[in-house]
Image (cartoon, rainbow, N blue to C red; front, side):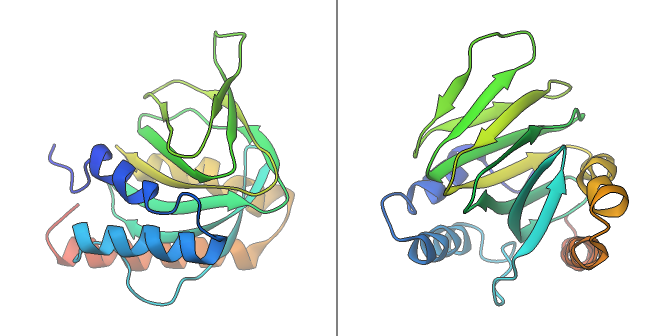
Length: 186
């Protein structure tokens, strides 16, 4: 299957946000993405959505979505931790502010990801993760994205009852996925 996004190019985009004040970092990462992928990155106003999944609560903004890929900025100003979920997708995270701690399934030592580093969650693997206060990253997933939605939406639907965030996530994902389909990209 051909994918639109290249992890190495996304790493370079995330790198543009390192050592910048937060809003400038968000702008720099998004601008780099738009330069490299002008037709595929959402260029409207940034919309932040609360995301509750796997016990963790953060905020995300959708930059691209399709049936086979998504690109988001994700993080938390107050810190959070939880379970990654287990999918048939590869998930990449590039930290550009703060740090991310991971405890991968089967490995007792934690890994610490600092600005400029990449964490990769391989298909069918799982991990626990922690974002200490002020951690932000560019996240990319490739594979059957629809299969990830139940995990990504269950906490909002069943635990927090945050139907506004649930609706905003579904609406944003659907809108961007339809745009991708109309462009001939799945």
